[in-house]
Every structure is written in structure tokens, then in C-alpha cells.
Image 1: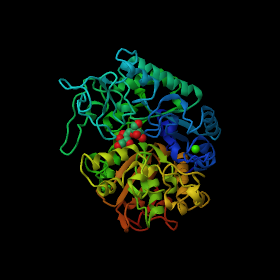
Image 2 (image 1 turned 120 degrees about the vertical axis):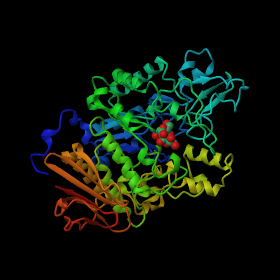
Image 3 (image 1 turned 90 degrees about the vertical axis):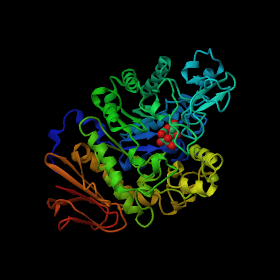
Image 4 (image 1 turned 180 degrees about the horizontal axis):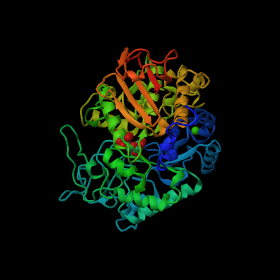
Length: 578
Ligand code: TEU
Ligand code: CA
């Protein structure tokens, strides 16, 4: 990059938001690093690995939940928002982590899970105690369906839970049902009640006052529900109706997020990061959520591109990925948020399969394809998120029996599918394998020692046996490793304004093998081409790119393209400057 930083003059004030040139790293604490040998990752384990994160160069750490929790959904069921679960450590440990990150120039974003609490949260314990309890209305309580006797089978509507079974749980004590879109230990909070909202804003302010730098907001677009809670459409073969039209981006969602901004972020939002996890969000909605002038959130996690490899959005019905569909989806989001709003960028997280297994080739071309995926994602316009282990090219796990799994979503589905739906164990295991969430939850592979250096005890979930050759110790000092390729991508975002701020133009949308796009600012252009296949292919790009300077590639011997069309080897990535 030349000294005058081409294009910098054209970047307006709004465009200068710090997070546009930032990279976020997600830590799923249970699986990151165990400091005390109980087999479960913890805060002191993270504190011991801060140099690793600093060296990688990330700007922000998003920490999945560490609050007090019965751990029914690994911490996404919170029983006390203002304390740390003993399995992870203490508030003092959290403060130390915060200091350790800040002193290294990194920010800490906490997970905010306020669509629901744990059923063991004192709010819910009070709420369920009596119909006239002052907190009764803090959750969604309803009587049996009209004309039906109380008890299981008479649920107020036909909605299913994300973790199998009905979305309602009958409560003997008061003869009513409570709504839980996730597990029965995750009752949904009633955001219609202003006391609920005030209590949540207080809690959020308490964390910001403590020094945290923002929130990743769990299923935040589910908090406003159609209060009439109508039955959903039940498609043949399904046990329950689909309630999502009545709670995805419901009637008051923008009002609630604006109110949250006013009560929590206003006056201090410029240094913070807010990202709303929003299953089912559309591009049109996302523009509204992320338009800086509207004061809602900085960016959202959308789910379109992680649904292209399954039938009808059903993760248990996987289908082969078509590159044209992936590009059409990500391209639509790039175009839709080009002028107003901002994208988040991710291949994986704790709910998704491992990126290299899903979008790359985790066998013969594991390293090449992991690097290519890094380059493709990080050079889009938006803020990239790296999920722990992705920077090492960690892969899916070949789980054996159902007893190897830990995820409540998997275990409940297996039970429902082998009983009510009549599938065999083998059928269900085969369907589960590619996209189940435990793929992402095997421990981070630190070295080739026992349990991959994750713990000295018995790990809570199996360690991938490929830790013997895929691990951090083998990669940190190897300049040609996947880890160091991520490092270079992060550096490039920091140093080259066209990566953070440039326009995005998708190229070759109909090509089934090549992912190609251009980034541009006045005076500087980048061409990014990647081959998503095991065979050689030619990227049919404009002749102007012949001889263009190579910025980075994933094959060590790559050079500027010579003829017309760019010949790409299997999983080759080339980034050229013009
Ligand atoms: O996930 C919400 C979500 O919609 C998913 O990606 C979820 O994994 C999927 O619906 C299951 O099929 C968030 C968290 O990221 C996830 O870990 C939690 O389990 C969930 O909310 C409930 O808090
Ligand atoms: Ca531990």
C-alpha cells in the first residue's frame, strides 16, 4: 500500500466507525482452555492464552455466556445475569480477563441472552409460584387451549421448540403453560412488560460500567411476539406448527431496540460493539436494524448463507452446497447493505459446523481450502468473525454413538426422531453428522499432547483425534500455516482502506467453481478470486488484471497472472491489486 493511502480522502465520517476495520474472535469458553483440570474450559484458561490472541491480531473477543447457569444449553440458560458460573470462575477472573484484553488493545464483547432466562432464575421461580405473583407477567403464561383439559397435549398453540417437543411446558402448580422457544429450561421473557425491559437495561448498564465493550445479543429479533400467539402452519411430516412468523422481527422489535439504545448505549456507543443475532432476518430488516442514523445495533448475524446446504432450512436434511447459491446469498447481503447499514461476516460459530469441513475440503486440501475461505470471507465488506479453532483449520468431528454427543439439540432430536418419527438410530446419526453443533464444540487443539493440551483432566466432550497434527503449537511459528494466513488477512484489513471501506462488486455469479469479486475505492482496486473445487479452473475476468500485482495467495509459488483468464489450482486463492 502506498503512503498516501489511496481513497482515504473519500471515506466519510460515518464510514470511519472503528469496527469496519476490526476483526472479532469468538470464544466458546467451555471448549477453549481448561485451567484447573475439571475438563471444562474456564476464564483462567482464557487468561492464559491472551498472547495467542494478541499475536493473531484480533481487535475484539466475543465471549459466549459465562454467567451463573444450570448449563442445560451450555450457559445460554442464565439463572443470574450478574455473576459468573463457578465452573467458569468468578467476577474477579472476569475483571482480570478484561484488564488483560484492554492492556493488549483488545475489547471484550459479552453474550447477552435476554429472549429467555433459565427456569432457575429467581424471576422465573417467582413467576411460576402463583398466578397473582407480581412477576407472573414477566413470562408468557397461558391457560390450556379453549375447551381442553389442562395437561400435556392441550398446549395453548401448536408451536414447536427449537430443541424438539412443544414450545409450551405445563406447570402443575398453577394449571397453566409457559412459552419456551428453546428448551423447557429456557422460558421466554415477556418484553411487553416494561418492568422486564427496565430490569434488563439495568443489568446491561451494570456490565458496561464494569468495563465491557458491548454485547452480542442472542436471538434478539425474537423478543417481540405477536401477543395473540396464533397457531403456525404445520407441514406434512412435522410434529409441530411453525410459530416463527409470529416472533421473528415481531411488531415492536425496532421500538424495543431503539429503547435499549437510549437506555443503555446512548452517549457511549461510539466505542462499543453491538451485534444482534437474528435468525430469519431479511436484508430489508437488516438495513433498518443497522442504519447508524436509527440507533439500533451496529450489525446483525443473518442466517441465509448457512442455510444453503440444507432442504427447507432443516439442518437434519443436509444437501450438497452449490457455490452459485452461496454467492447469490452473500452477494445479495453485500448489495443490500452497501449504502446504509453494515454486514457481519462469518463462516462458523458455536452453532454451526466447522467451516473447512462445510465449505472447503477437510481432507487432501484442508490447509489450502481453510486459507482460501479465510481470504474470501475477510475480503468481503463487513466485520469478520473468527470462531475459535477456525484459524487452525479445525474440522468437524466424526462422532460415533449418540452417547458421544453433548448438545441438547442433538440429544432431544435423536430421542424424538427415533421414537415419534420412527427413524432408526443409524438413520438419525447419519443425518446429524454434517451440521450438528457439537462439531464446533470439541476442544480447541493447542498441541499434540494428551487431550490436545486443552485439559489435564477428562474433557467434557471428545477431543478430535486429528489434534495430533492439527494444533496451535505446530502453526504459530510456521509462517505458512493457516494461523499465519489468518494473521495476514487481519493485518490487511487494518492496513488497506479498500478492505475495510471499499465498494463490493460480485463477479462471475454463474460460475459453479470460482468465487470472484472486486473491492474498490477511488484510486485502488482489489480482485479476489478463489477456486472452490478439487480441480483446476479458469476465472474468466477482465484482461485488465493480466500482470496485476499479487497482494496475497495461498500457494507459495503464486505470481501475477500472465494470460487472459486466471488459471486457479485446486482451492487456490489469489488477491490482486489494480
Ligand atoms: O442460537 C439461536 C439459533 O437460532 C440457532 O442458531 C440455534 O442453534 C438453532 O436454532 C438450533 O437449531 C442462539 C445461541 O447461539 C444458541 O447456542 C442457543 O442454543 C440459542 O440461541 C438459545 O439461547
Ligand atoms: Ca475448568
